[in-house]
Image 1 (cartoon, rainbow, N blue to C red):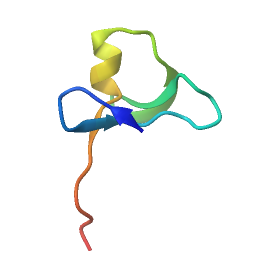
Image 2: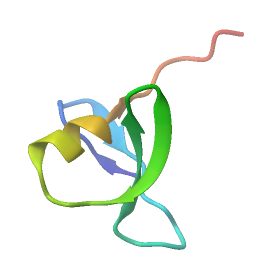
Image 3: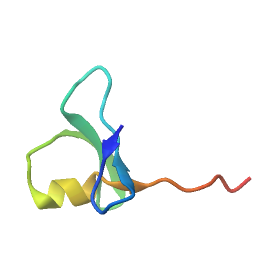
Length: 53
């Protein structure tokens, strides 16, 4: 887990494929290689919230 953008978010990196991150593309979740772009950083940043139950 790494710091994401914006502040307070996280980026989830694959343990067995370093440099690949969980990313949302439209309504889908992908594991994709970081291309260094601002769009990629935004798409691969997630806010951690308390569980619903």
